Image (cartoon, rainbow, N blue to C red; front, side):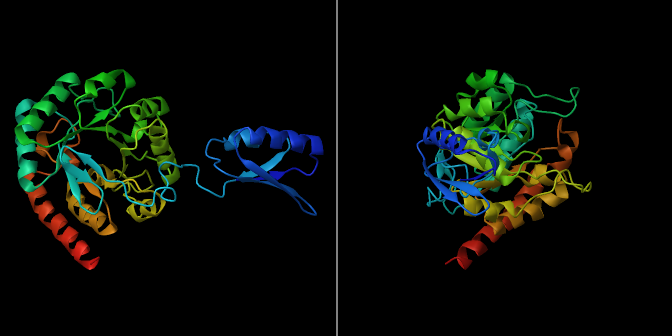
Length: 337
């Protein structure tokens, strides 16, 4: 971190600032030039709040020369993280597929979909028991009943289950869930993130609608700073000016995140596009870009789905998409040999 001091700052004020900085267990190096003075910080500056430094009267500007996230940073963890859940792995060079309905609706529909995605080659079953909806009048999910149905589906199929938590007060209900998903709207719910950081359970963290990659990584850092290293990042599209799709899939996020972090990276082409016909080509692109996993919405009858039917694939469409997805996976693996 580099701190640029204002011209009118006195020696006493600079000394007080440096003494305050020493409280963070960093070394300071004061460089005095012809027209300016700069304090360079050496050591771990992740715990220093830039805004707190900037608020000092004598500070002109603050610049970081190292990323503020330490636990999620590839510089400190050069090897890729592999997260194993129920005998399945996410990360480490194999492609995992998470599939299932947007929301858990009925026992019969969930079971039919779960069996269909397993037969097509899915590794995990997804389904929303709690649903964040734009309209308060839309279906909000079955809550605890939905979680119980997911657990039942896991018994029937053997697939580990993934479902979204919306509120900290529901955390106890997720004790038997394999992967807890944090949705885009909760990406910066820091109280929830810290609580999940104290749980020994994998967390699938979705990128916010307008979040930068650094903001996503800082949210991951909130979880990891509490002791939970089992974080999976998910790119699910960001909000742009383009109205033809629900969101805009930032496919470049995969190689960029790969450079910055050791955490596994998931692409959700369903929420990214909002259009069923676009899910397959975007999923194939995600594999080519190097994603560790895909999260795809599949419904036994999308036309009658209680939520997000337009972006859901039928079991037949999912089966067809899986053939292309696995073919691209094999091609990329052979190219890397």
